Length: 191
Image 1 (cartoon, rainbow, N blue to C red):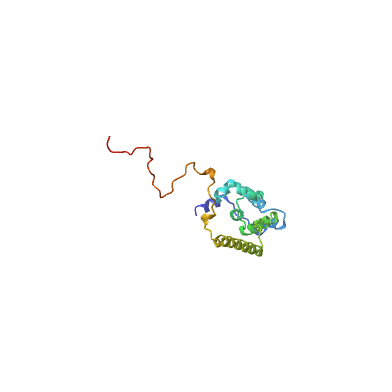
Image 2 (image 1 turned 90 degrees about the vertical axis):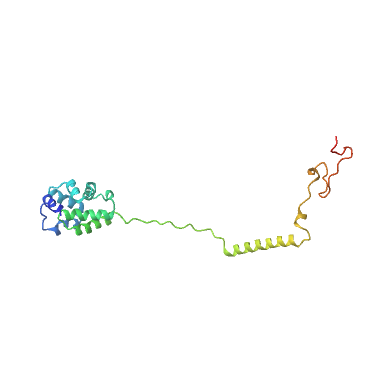
């Protein structure tokens, strides 16, 4: 790996007391970010140098050190960043992650999920709906029976046109031909 020699140049040898590194966190006297920041400072490293080697933005490393999880992109990324950062400093990454998760659970409650509840439908009782349907069916049948049982045709039910609306001159019956008027001479072909 090309990064391994440069990491060795950047990082002094890790202390052999990895179990003691996070003892203050386990006692509740410090936070994981504080331990990581102290180890970084003790080794004379800058956040920008570590960010370049780990390919993690320096604002995320600074957020881990300050304990400001609201600036981190999400829990999965934050856990990966803590593990990588601790491993880079020569600390136990799994222990750092376990303690970091414990800190996060203590600070913030789990996200409360509020699922929308369906609005209660206004329901008509089935008996009432059936009764109303039966009344409508009986009324429709009764209307049809009344109209069809009479000896009249539907055309007979339509009223006649009022006298005021009839034309002034009576029309000839449809079968009659128009006769020429008597005072007019018949047209002939001779002039």
